[in-house]
Each structure stands twice: as C-alpha cells, then as structure tokens.
Amino acid sequence: MAIPDFQSLMLPVLRESASDEVKIGDVIDRLADKFSLSEEERSLLLPSGRQTTFANRVHWAKSYLGKAGLIELTGRGSYRATESGRKVLEMPPVRIDIKYLERFPEFNHFRQATRPEQERPQREATTASAGITLTPDETMRAAQQQLESELGRDLLERILPAPPAFFERLVIRLLTATTSSFTESARETARTMSKRIVLIDGDELTRLMIRHGVGCRVEETLYVKKIDEEFFDE
View 1 (spheres, rainbow, N blue to C red):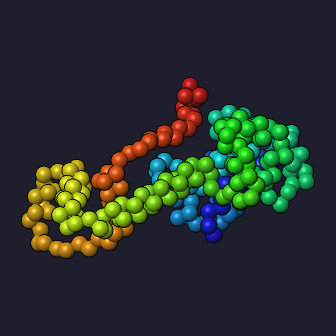
View 2 (cartoon, rainbow, N blue to C red; view 1 turned 180 degrees about the horizontal axis):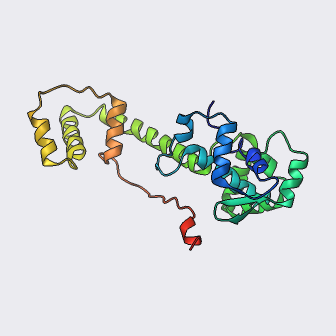
View 3 (cartoon, rainbow, N blue to C red; view 1 turned 180 degrees about the vertical axis):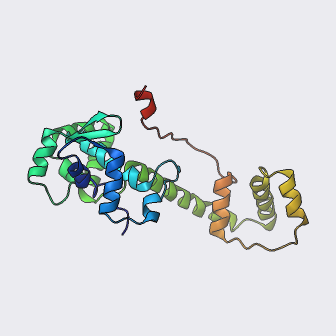
C-alpha cells in the first residue's frame, strides 16, 4: 500500500501512547507493520537523504497532536497521551486530521501565532475547503518543483525562437557547467572514447540548465531547520 499521509497517521500515533510513555522510534516501527509497508516504502528517503518519508510523516503527526494538547513530550524521542488525548480515545473519531484538531483551543492558538496576519483569511479558507495530505516540508518541496517546472517552460520559450548562434553558445555554457567538477583523468577518458550522439529534448535541456544555473540564477535561499536532539541531550 502507499505510505499514509501525515493526517492519516494522527489517530494511530495517539493510540500508541494511550496507556503509557512510548518512544517515537518504536512507534514508527510498529505503525510500519500495522500499515503493512513494504521494505521499499519503509526505506524511502526524503530528498535530503537524512530521514525516511514514513518517519518524517509520523513525526509531523506527533507534532500536530502536541500542538493540540493531545500528547506531551516526556524526554528525548518519547511522548505520551495527555488527559485530553486519553479522553479523545475513550470515544475516538474515525479519523483525526487538521479539521478535527481545530476544535482544540491550543491548536488554534498555535496556528494563529504562526501565520502572518494578512495571510490568515486566505489560508484558513484553503484549509477548510481542501484536504491537506502533505506535511509542511513536503508542501515546500512540491512548491519548488512547481516553480522549477514553470521556470523550465519560460526558459524553453526563450530558447526556441533564438538564432542558431545563441543555441550554440548555450550548449557550450552548459557543457562547461556539467564538466567543471570532473577530474582531468575523467575528461581525458571522455576524449579517448569513441564519439556518440546523445539526444536531449527540451524538458531535459531546461532541467540541466536549472540544475547548473545556466540562463537562470538563485533568487532566494530558504533554510529548513529542525530541532537538534543531541543539543538537548547533553
């Protein structure tokens, strides 16, 4: 089955801590078993390569439950259900999601405090009308992919009507940027190999241009930071 989205994990994450303190690592393993995830699904990494997608979504589910006051942290990597969380589990809903969490004042206070005033009406309407399945960091990556897709189309619109001399300069610039990090030994090997033709379509061309900064530039850099668990464990 597909990896569950983080909202589908909220109720299972809460249930795991119904009777006692639990470690998030153990919860991740147990829920992976309960959702019958394959080895490939369990090991699928985020683009950063530092965490699995499933573990990331479990952590986000735990985080949102905490913002609603349904669980509390008890130590590094450990949590348990609060009194409010245990009351929810006495008559559990079919599903806990962001819409459900809006009934808790703690969660609404958290959301209001983290939103710019001018964005609140629009984002609240979006939340109410659309089912959110992506975690915040997944939303950011999806937005980046959309921006790069639109940038690729813009680049192609500029390239297609350009004269042949411009295209030749573009190819030279791009080849210089893909090979600049190669060692002299690698370049020598490429020169001695028999020549071959590589076909690159417009989408691949613009992807390479974006990757190597040819015909485009960095407009803004966003840094995503997370808790340093080792810092708090000293």
